Length: 362
Ligand code: NAD
Ligand code: ZN
Image (cartoon, rainbow, N blue to C red):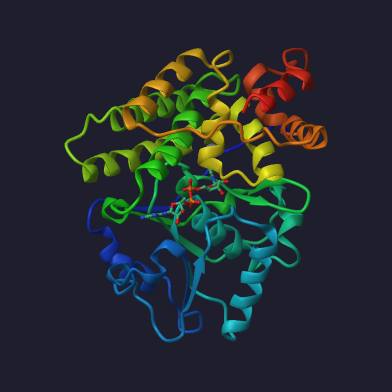
């Protein structure tokens, strides 16, 4: 199952560049039909009181706006709740789902759009190719960039048992609007943490056993740009944000044609047990991975110094042995990531004790 042949899918439409957000209304209208004529907007809660952006959302009376609290990562329970809210809103299905925000809002839109047309609990769809029916036409609009969620075939959800994506051909967004002006308000620290998610995706896929020429080319170019962005090589923030959006598209593709590795396996453990957010969690983990990714680690530290961002330390200091064991088990179960990092005989290359020791240093 892990190593099956696959023909990968990308988003169908891209609108790229400053000002493209102004065309959201046109893009939505193209997808409306006489019966399915309304839209669901899932928007990061940061914009809840930002009139200058909200006034530009092409919302009509029939539409539904849901503000996404991105303090916590997407949960299967909330996906189910939003799905029920959408089904109760009108007698017909929406024509379009818009996901506007970071990985959190976009993954909510991607997964909820699928759950509207697939019965049951979203936790039962965490995994590969479990979705049966195509979802609602989804438009993603990143407002912070680096996860690659806007171009990826997965929507990562935390369920009662696991943090795992709903991954299939239908999870891909149908359309993406990349407008760098929407990133202007991102705090420096968040910009760095989400940008480093992209850097780490690339390091892990480039150094993994699953990589092919396609994934490698995306990863190399993506990290060239990411390093330029975080070593302050661009004229101004708008140019850097636009470049970073390109890096994120390419980084998303580097993992599509490759796979993540040690850092993501460990950061999922932190996320499930301590609720650590993905971007910062990856930085906390990567800070301990010099042995596994020496070159990437060196560049990471240079970018951190250039940005003057602190990476939280001692976050596991108060953890019980039971919590450490739980983190280890969650990480260990992410077989595909270990397999990519160390090859099919990965169990001979890393032990649960070594993983536990890494968690204790974070
Ligand atoms: P995020 O979406 O959680 O947002 C981070 C912070 O930035 C939030 O506080 C948010 O309010 C704020 N923010 C967003 N846009 C802003 C703006 N324009 N101005 C000011 N603040 C803004 O962060 P993220 O790092 O983009 O996403 C993390 C999530 O993405 C995790 O749930 C992770 O699992 C998921 N992820 C998904 C994929 C995928 O392929 N689907 C890949 C990697 C990560
Ligand atoms: Zn990631």
